[in-house]
Length: 225
Image: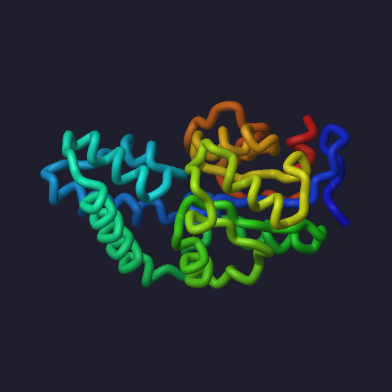
């Protein structure tokens, strides 16, 4: 049994971003990026870090280098990106079920009972590692991560690939995102979009602070309004 119809469209799949939607790992990314910036005498601001949400590691290191006024070769940028990832993974060793954001676990299980197909669509190349640390890797039918796509959000590739693997039409999917780039990617994919978090996200179909108290039925009611 799927969810009820939204505007005469039957919803069959849910695609979740990872960082900031399922778990709060953004602060760990920020810590790892700051460590790189410090080597350049550059202090990465929280506002700048927000612009890195949903952006690939390679594109992020290019952005930070530009902000810092630094010029590096392709090989140097790759080395810095690798160093950042190693730092990030070391910070992630302490992750566990305690780090799943409020309401996410219950919402996922309620959605599974509805017969919905669940996927993760993330720019992170570490998505499977993170989900395994959180203890919820097996709850998703497919994980589409940075290892499987060429283009960063707002390009819709990550979400379209998720729908393709799930054998679903894009219009029958709902995307959960915490970044403007991610919301735009969902729109570009022709999917419903739900903004998650405290950021002022534009053009999403619905906005929630977190999943606490949210059920599939309640979500559909909101999206149908």
